[in-house]
Length: 538
Ligand code: HEM
Image 1 (cartoon, rainbow, N blue to C red):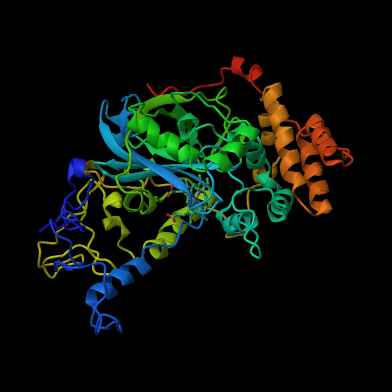
Image 2: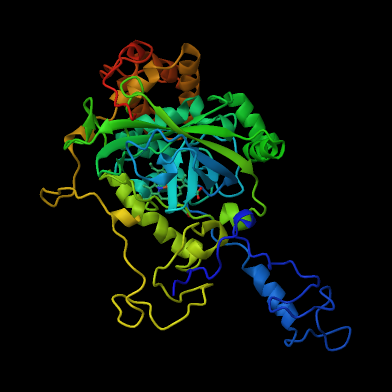
């Protein structure tokens, strides 16, 4: 017999909550024994001592002692919301994933926005990248799109993630600064490991201080592979486009808000939803041919520090996300939700981007300790909305009461149930791909270009936006103690733009180094006239 691993079917509007939890008429122990008094411990005489036999006291304190679970090692501060994703149906030509392909199909989602570096109690409006993670509870299983509000990342290979995060987190001796990048270790790392240059300039731009979660774009960053019903593939990048447009704070506003209302973004999101002003985004894809080189117009699609300019490959909108519900309980939902880049559904595959491949290991691994054992898909917010029959057994916090003796395959006892599914029956069948080459620790030569996309980004900004970038570098580098790090940062800026380098050097009171900026693609609006070859999905 098919037994749900959770033992409890998802209950629609109840969002998987166990309706029995804390709903009884009387106060009880966790075992349901009614309590006559929760204000006094059991004592030998009114003046004590307290007795070890007071099981209510011990259970109550024991539970309280363990109420905090470890916060996320990154993206610890976040805010979440429930919503619905509706597919337009125009992606059916490129993917067989029903969530994207089936016209009008509504899929429930949970979205969590976050900062990256601050701890759970840090301020919302600090200069940082923002997480934009979406869990689609599709009828074919859970799909997570774990993105950010910037289209590129600091590093090209997941093996550098501990390094960039150790450099960016507060200094280990004083645990400061709590939430900003303005310190020596961060600038030391990003100026030595120059593949971080592109992401860093996005952080120093207005994108690093969004006005609201509702006014942020989101990006899947990596190139993904879509597969259609005929097994044909294309390479895509995912984009979230906010209905309200992209808006940022100015630095003074961000600083004041961080002091006056550290919950600025969290409050804005919850208030908007409560008022019925439901935040909306459209999901778009840039669709590129799946060629052997995995490049597009000379851009390496496996390099997560590079973008594909929208003028070269337009973003085609394929569905709409509307956030309609605030979490009922922050801990149960926003804190316990577990996203994972390896949560994919048939029709959506990853690529060989080495950053993505490392992430596919990291999320499960961290959740094993953060959420206490291997059964966190049974936590209500993480339960799939598709039947589960995974032959798993036992482990910490097992909620399923599995019946029968068979939890293995093949078996001759249960008619070899459950059956395996081929692609025609909704099975996740990977598209066969050739792999060849020597086993090496290394990267392709195209990964050596660290500056041309940073220069392209800077050149695409308006004069006011460029001024904000120069002011941000000046402010942040002004907090660095080591003179050598500031000087090294200026040599990086000299490769991006001479004017930017001079403005920051002047702000820091240092000489501007000589240097010729790198060549880059022409920025918008010149590029806007280039139609490029677009790959229409209809
Ligand atoms: C958490 C995005 C790279 C490890 C997150 C979250 C987001 C995110 C949005 C928060 C998820 C939530 O709200 O619960 C990204 C993006 C990346 C990236 C867009 C690059 C394109 C990496 C890499 C690693 C990594 C390279 C490790 C090698 C983690 C871990 C967490 C996390 C361990 C905490 C997860 C948890 O506790 O549930 N990331 N990340 N990330 N990320 Fe990443």
